[in-house]
Picture (tube, rainbow over the protein chains, first blue to last red):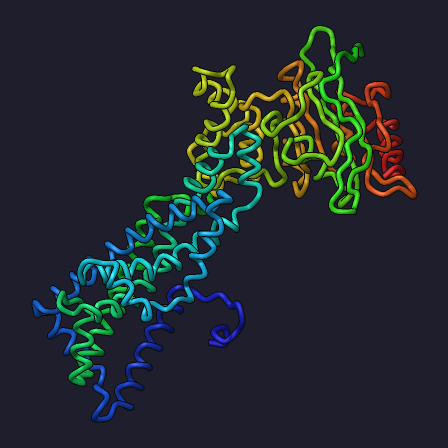
Length: 258
Length: 263
């Protein structure tokens, strides 16, 4: 018990699990006790989620959101990789650094510009999402490139490789696993943005549109149920991406065996 | 012990390296000659010794062609200026690509060696057997012990086929058992080809002297900025090269004292 409050103390997996479960139960209990008439109790939220899960509305909207997220993530990662790989060429370095700074641009002020540039609501949502994600992806990938140890480049040079081959071996092949790691770490950002962009073109639905609809009618129970679902889906994709990464790049899970 | 010193294999002439206004290396000159022993294929083992922080790593990078000197030149085989890729380089801590299996890393090297074209697989198998890492060929570096990494790293550079092999602090942080193995391995490599030349940059005086035929001492001269080669010790002349039990010789202990005094 004392260990739990000691800095850097190592606890067993079982202890950690028991601790987490206890904390979740405690949080739910506090939520249950502190809920008044306005704030729905956890039981009600869970019941609402169970009910929503059986409806076609929720499934359709979740699928719409997932399709949009996956599509945007794929486009974003392709754009990111092109920008990141080109960033080692001095000509493109400035462009890459500018995109990194674009994290500070708020999308809300650019909606009209995007509306002019895109043909329909669907394209508007997609490109808003892509442009929202890319600066974060590029930031993460450039950080990976910057932190490549000099020895990786030196080893290639000693093998007599030219600059293009070094780019291929060290960055494209050597850091391929990092692409999935970045996807995993930044999935939360795109998942966060989807609720915002779906509010812009509600006709196509989506979990964000559904959330806005329930919010409009002050249906807090269903709003919280949807929030819970968004959270759980996020956790699922986090796990899925980690598993794919470990499967595709076995050296990321290698342990010293001898 | 019969031997002759023949042609110059590597020559460093008037090497200077300056960072801004700060001289790191000053007027470095030395040459490595081909040592010929009748009836056997004898390579060269040269050590560059110096205190920590004196500029050994900078000289190592210059010799590896990874960095250019401010002035001066390093040439091999007469008149070829050293470029990255000309030498086999074994880095401190025996760096290997973490995303490649040992076999893939060795393949990268062997494909750069025109002499092994068409026999890449056989060459890898032969050396893996000699270095006792056959069972680890399909493992990733993280799965290997320190000793296995060392062997894989040395093998990678050997398969590349360069006559010159540069080692940066190869004895650093090794326990005594592993150290003996590394020494044996280096000696094994040194006799693998007549022109094979091992250049060891180290601050471990005793181990370096025990396996070398020539020692260059890198140090600072009084009143002069930057490090230079202060002394060349020909261990062949002193009868201290190619002897397994050289550490028991009095001349060996005297040489160590002389080097320590000169650092």
